[in-house]
Image (cartoon, rainbow, N blue to C red):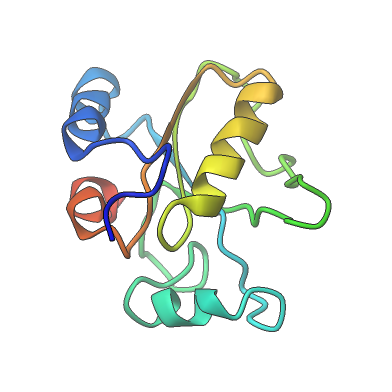
Amino acid sequence: MGRKPGVSEPSELSSFLETWGSDKIVVVDARNIDFAIEAGDEKTNEYAPIAGTTPNYRPNAVNLPYDRPNKSMDLTPLTTDKSTPIITHCGGGGRGQKAKDFLLANGYENVLNGGGPEDKECWEVFGEL
């Protein structure tokens, strides 16, 4: 199947982590905890729980679902520092790219799309953050 368009290569994600340090990076999980809205998210949630649904898992991750119908996401829980390094993801990278584009359009400067747990090579780089 290959990597979805816009998903960063594992080497680019590794360099991003080296540059910024894993303690500074925020991971934006664009999946939806309401599986009635995004049924496919239930599948990836089974082996990679959505941010905020499992205590002490993925300490750098915040769940900010990308709303496809409205082409938006609620950025209220996100830092106001627009230079914060961010890796977006969903299950495989489609909504991760939409989330990345939305963040860039809202002034965030350092954003990569990490794909998601379906892209095992990328997930191995940042999936525990």
